[in-house]
Length: 428
Image 1 (cartoon, one colour):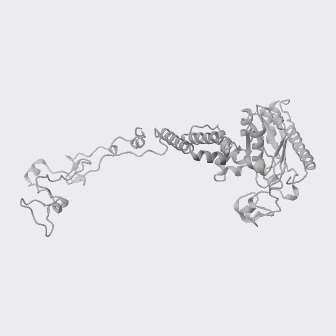
Image 2 (image 1 turned 180 degrees about the vertical axis):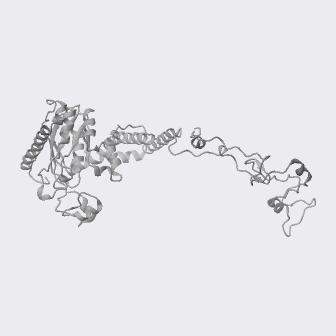
Image 3 (image 1 turned 90 degrees about the vertical axis):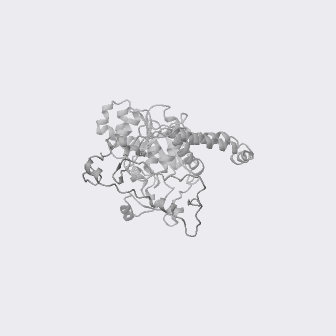
């Protein structure tokens, strides 16, 4: 493999190679060089021998000189080793100038494209895959089949192929930063056991979400931590025939938290504003919004399953402009995961957070108090409310937007009451 080609640093400085000074005019110290006649008249001083050579030629104390008078350490007839004199640059008087910058190796500039980097990464990934394949071909493979079950080979191959694509950069993201492959292979894989085994989410009415085209999912928000939004994403992707992804409209706080910002973008979340919502809907995406915001997710346990205000109805205006249906979504079970019995408001103001919850387990049990209670969940998708029966200009009518917002809110509230009556237990 050849050497990588980098962008030279001289091209970024905007100047050509440095020209060495002319020794016939001035010396490095700024003194005028003497005339040719004066130089010839003045006797030349004998060249001073290098100290290193003098030390090498001087015999050590106690050493017996050879017959020829040469150093006994040197074999007879051997030539005297020459002292290397680096020809770095032009010589002026007794001083040696440094080499020009154009002759020095240039480090790659920040952001410079190094050719061959992806090829080397791909070669490393292939070597790792081959090594793992050889290791699993023997008795280790039989042990892996007993431990991981039948079909582990295909899962391992898919995992190695995924790692190779991530290393070589062979993956795509959309204009909002959504990484579909990373979401399916990592995020949803981590959330799926939580939805299926821990919360045992029951999904109803998934047929109300269209097979294609834009649709707006409007749901209630609760539970201190926004697990309800994540579980809704898993429910739509795993239970919908076309495995559609939910593009969530998140609050500003999500995009200012270190680390959470990048993960949210990769998972397909975007800022909760009308412009982004309308663009996603016009592109045919399934968009999710939780209009209660922090008022719903941070409400006390005594007000559970009582919907808060839905704001000014900006989500309805976006649906009207994009001419897409609105699907109400009711979630039961999230309210009891973190029963909020208090709020440390002073600490919340100091930390810049909307609330700091106090639950029966947090902060009394420390990190264990952050574990949600294993409640039984139900996610119900209602019948879609059409918006194409109104012109897009209807989004500018505040009375129409208010009435449609109130209709969506009342639909979700009545569905919550009905699901609570049908529920046998919080945990079963």
